[in-house]
Image 1 (cartoon, helix red, strand yellow):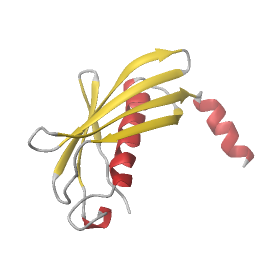
Image 2 (cartoon, rainbow, N blue to C red):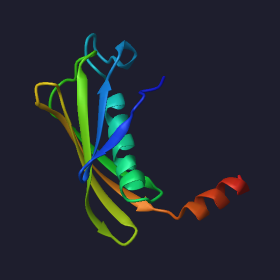
Image 3 (tube, one colour):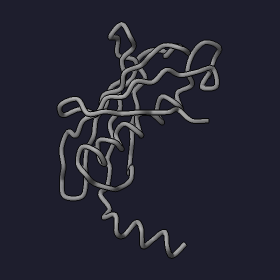
Length: 125
């Protein structure tokens, strides 16, 4: 199953629009929290990679669900870098429905890892 997340830059934000299909259902008609969280992880990863030209991994991510997300409704995700401390990047993101209502928000700590060390590690395994 793919969520087909396509993100773009909008000023200092990364923006992605996602419409969840029935395969993402938790209770009938509504999206399970896992796919909502997975898109946050992708969007915040885009902030790390495309906005800042870095590679790395998710160290922690916290998602707060504000209201149920309906199957078949377009959701707009927005992510941005809130601060950086050395290799630690703190990223925040929000998700709004087509009426502008906040459906969920997330924060994440990402750790920068030089792309060379990732490539070397994959060759060893």
